[in-house]
Each structure stands twice: as structure tokens, then as C-alpha cells.
Image (cartoon, rainbow, N blue to C red):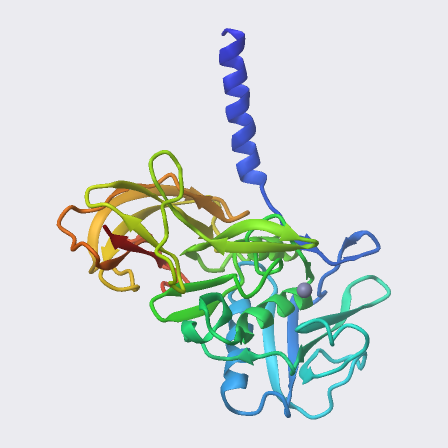
Length: 363
Ligand SMILES: [Zn+2]
């Protein structure tokens, strides 16, 4: 074997092991080690004032129930109608407040944790700032990441309960603990908060793998684009030409819409996630063209690809070649997109996070 061949082999081995070991999550430390709940459960008592029967309670409930389906041994619960919330009272609680100490005025929400003498978690309180323009809606056009006026409450709550579970901030990948309101899934008009691959992987590392846990695959049109201090920053994924140059976008649209030619070969960039218990998991991805922003198997099939996803960091790739059909109508807007596990080979915890879209306008 010559030196060049050996170098190639070493490079391949190195890449393979990097893929398997890749992670980015960070954890809250006590005495130099990751802290955790000794009973593998975090149950929060929600304020009767802030979370009465109604949409805010429903929103909080959806976040707790989402976290409870994570593939680690940590379970989550919630008790409603807590009448007397307070910091450091030996009860995990969640409430709204305009001012709480030096930080709450400048943070949209904050999680305080206390440790036992053995460094296990003792209490975690989540306090939302009620001067922030939160909304519980999942209608994307009302929410910041899709041009709306409101900060999505569920993404911020997802982030804070990640802290309550023992996770800290992460800057170097697309993740809920790095930037919450641009960590969201949309296909059609609904935008849904979720915990994400990196945070799920962090909980598995701290609490161990839940052997009876679910499989879950997902695809989103968001990705990591940089960082700001200890936080990641996220932006929309793109459409490129075959020279890997981003195509021109239509001016003045809320969401990206790329100008394409009939018959043009494009590269579709999306972020694929393995959120479940099995790592790696191989899946087929179907690519589609749609006349609306809901990608479904009923849409026009453009081809298929294969992904093998480790539960580590999300896999953002633009190595997907698609040909724009020549029979489309000039001047018309369409949407291209992907459905992971489009052949339904896996029974998943959620099938609603399996598809997403990017807009195109035909020249
Ligand atoms: Zn935080």
C-alpha cells in the first residue's frame, strides 16, 4: 500500500469515527461532573396564576409531553395549580414574572437550579418574563421565525426545560439549547417546537439510553450558521446551483423563494435529524415538488436518496441533486421538499416532523 493510499484510508477512518462520536451538547456541571436528577424524573409544578386551564397550560403541557418522549431514561411530568411558587423552596416550579433578581429583566426566561450536597439536582425553577411578546400559537405566520410579531413560547419553554434536565448552552451546532426560536419545524402553516437531536443525545449521555424508547427521524429547513457567545445562531437552508452557488432569491418575500429555470439541476440543502433511540439509523428520503408549502407523498415525486444518521449532531447537507421539471408554469411559485422515511419503514414517535419545504419561483 503506497503512502497516498494509506493517507486516504486513515482519512476515511478518521471521518468515520468523528461521525460516530460527534456531539455538541454541554451539561450543567457540579463538582466538575454533569449534574442530574437522581430519580431519573423531573416533574414541575406550574403556577395556578400563570398556567390556568386554557391555551398557555396546553402549550406548557405539549412541551413537557414532548420532552417526556426523549430517548433517554429521564422522564418529565407536570402538576397543575401550584398556588405558592418561590425560588429555593424544594419544589420544581414554573411561573411568569416581570422581575426576578438581576437577570430576568434582560432574559426572556431563566432557569435556576440548586444542587444537593452530592451534586445531584435538588430543585429547578423556570421563570418566563411576562413582558416578552410570547404567543402559544403554532400558526407560523404569527411567529418571529416566519415573519410574525410573536416569540414562540413553546421553543423557549423547550430550551428552559432542557436546562431543568441538566443541559447547558451549545454554540457549535443547530440545537434548542443554542437558539430557541429558530429551532422549529414547519411543513405547511404549522410551526412546532421540538427538542432536537443534539439535546436528545445529551440526555442519553447523562441518563442512559431508554431501551423501550421511540424511533424518530426529522427534517427541517433550518441550520447552524454561526454563534454569539455561548449561543448558536441559525438560518434557513438554501437552494444552490451545481457549482454550489446559492441561487438568487425573489425580493420581498417573508420566507426564501429561489428563482429556478425549467430543466435546471439544483441542489437542495436541508437538515436531517435522528432524534430517537437507534444510532445509526438508515432511511430513505423522498424528494417532491408541490403547488403549496405542504410536502406530502401525494406531491410530484422528483427522486429519492439515502441517509444514515447517527444520533449526535444534526446533518445539514446540500448533496441532493434535483431537476426542476420542464412543464412548470413560468412566474408561478412552487415548493420543493423532502420526506424522510417516505416509504414508512419505521414506526416513529412523530410522523409530522418528517417533511419540510423551500419555495421556488420558475423563470
Ligand atoms: Zn438558556
